[in-house]
Image (cartoon, rainbow, N blue to C red):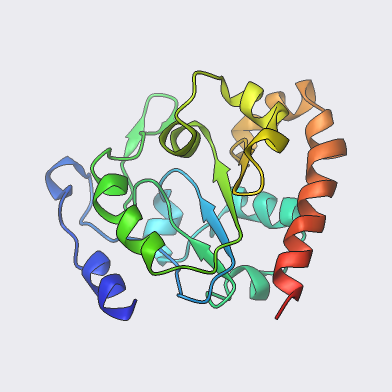
Length: 190
């Protein structure tokens, strides 16, 4: 696993499409049990090199009910975005992840993480890639049980999604408590 992570850290596959120098952000270990697949690092994450080190990460940790220490313990939680580098800014937020990244690295990394019991697919890019269905993000999140035991589909925890959260109160009332129980069970089985 260490050699593969070093290869990822040196990756420059998308450098011509990136606004800044490539700086892949990933957290992984062969002993990880929970995998979080999001979209791509934001600018703050790019600058710090720490995944989910922003307001979205604060909300995500709240959703999971894990401490920062638990969240950043790579022995238990792996974090692998669809695009490992900051893609740049667009008109209404960050640009989509560069499409080359996931097909190049995900399968190789997943082969090195045999203990993953649950993968959280955060946002439409991760869901489209892994679920390959014709549903909308809301439909996937509403039908989250149908993807178990392998996946749970989640909206992005960005503050930009406050309107979605208001329109869909069932998410916090129904899905989150059940997801937390599963995650607690997975992380406490050491």
